[in-house]
Image (tube, rainbow, N blue to C red; front, side, top):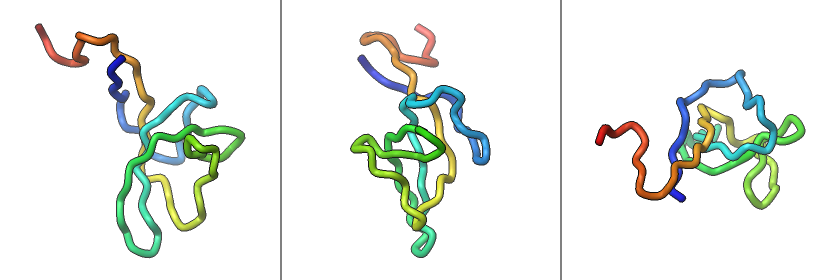
Length: 79
């Protein structure tokens, strides 16, 4: 199964489907470094896959739902 994301969404909008995997762009508050992680929004908190919560040193810049695409198909490419 290949994966792709839906459109980017900016905070303060949050996922309406709890526990759904999202690609999240994070910015470190002190350094400004941008990183990407697969996370879930559960019980009013962003959580990494190992269930650790997002620290106060990082902020969510944007997020996108991860959509499953069957193998052999490419999303957005005519064929």
